[in-house]
Image 1 (tube, rainbow, N blue to C red):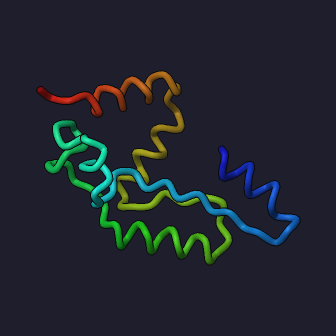
Image 2 (cartoon, one colour; image 1 turned 30 degrees about the vertical axis):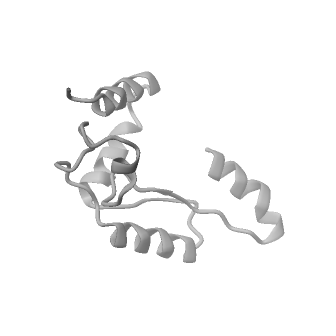
Length: 101
């Protein structure tokens, strides 16, 4: 919502904002965040960072307000999440982010 609000505030100045929602992406993010021993660790299938970056760039060039980057499974998960309560999504993420030790 921050990006959507910022987009609205800046449009009169000719500035466009695009929110990229990438899901899990093949990068060093999870490892650097100390999440190697979680569901987000090395064994998780992640989206190509090149693909996600290209999708974000293309959406920005097209003037889109937001884009879900990644594969079809990521986009379908985002669609399903629209119907879940925030508390349910938060609990699900907390469970996945918890170390397996």
